[in-house]
Length: 619
Image (cartoon, rainbow, N blue to C red; front, side, top):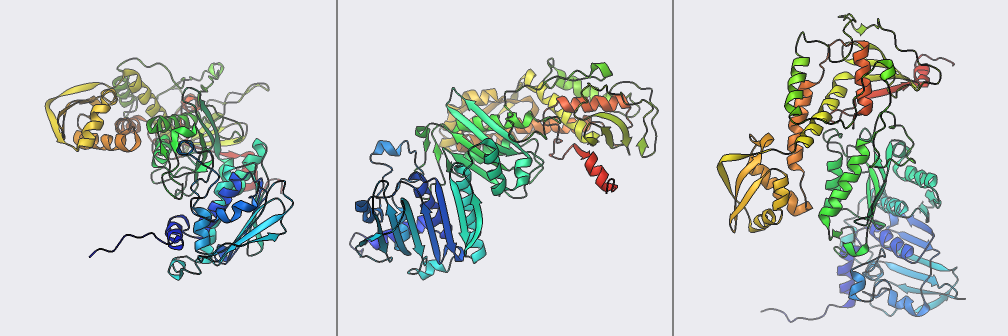
């Protein structure tokens, strides 16, 4: 026999809500700091003991709370952020659910003290995690609010057993402070743990100060090896700004990835997928990119009321957002050249910037434009040419053939490096002086010595040219002699119908023959020998999850990458000085030339000061 339906007591309802909102001390800090920021606070002081389990005290200089609202603030669904349903559809504040204070007070001993702006008296309210009327009492307090929480989970010992060690819990708490410090550069943050100052971050009012804060939160190495992003798409109302780490500054874990939507730290699969794809050609296998990025858009285009923790959002135009993030980051990474990888992060690299063509013809060095026009059919012609070019006994790939090859380790230069005039600009990768073991090119530039892995560098150059040629030819399709039928879900079949233009652009011709069945009549030429059915299922899965798919392009690029690897100059092939200089100039004009197709670096710089240290010069 079923029990009668009855209302839960306020205490039990609050503790159920606390199970979603208050997971650990870090959750308490997040909710309280967001309330302070929403109240207009410009200075936040966080004082914790035993990683916040014993004490969390947060003081702000915000607008404060009215005396008559203090008791109400500890009730469920009491908020000043929204009033009507329409407000929920365009939330501008960090908090809005009205659950945090009620949930926290139900599992701890809470004291809330506040003085409203313009008031001559502060007031205090206390709760002990029990059903009792909160009593107001006068207090001494400057303008703003102080929330003091003691003995987290004192009345729910089972929850307390799930907490980790003090060190682990404090790391989670510190991470919350870091995220919020990155979201609001204009707010000062002070974090103390067991009476010791851990972070003291002053307001950052300039670009330099903002980068200093990023360096203090993410480490100086990140800001030193990052690229500034600032892309504004006026047509769609989207703006992406922040910093992305160079591909060489990758991580073994996804532990340095901060993404904010309208100032709110979020974790979203569409965002993660878009960023990951933007790094696909330059990131070593198994590594993760580092970034601090800010997406600004109309609040009506994003739903933040997805989960009680507010970490998840739902974009109303997910495909638009995915494509914008991918293309913006992809363009910034593509614009990295050897001459600007060391540019300070404060300098914005606009994705629309086209690489400047530098004149090296005076040195009789060939220069290949980064995006030169490639005639139709060039993919097949170029691959054939590279095959002939680098077959055994073939002529060198560039320039003069008069230099004799040596079988030893270093190929000396019989052709002297061009002497640069005093007012002449030395190329970023300098001029070649020798070849080491038939593998590395040694070059001299203004800063010192450059070492280039010639096969890896040439592989990237060939790969980018093959991709460009393929793009200009377009996706060519071929009909299947026997059309392939495949069973799918009705949802997948609907997606195939709704995205017919997308699949046609990718080179597929599909038809829906029943509620749960598709037939494939035409496929891209480059994928004729692939498992087309499985590939199409993967594409449908991407379209349903992210609103778009790049699997076809990735598959094609994988084939082009293999062709480029076989077409690139091999180790132990002796190059002349003009050939080496030609390769260096091509690197300077080629997108993503800092990494080969597999994400490995293609060159490195040793400055004169570093060389002096090796030989203890000047010491």
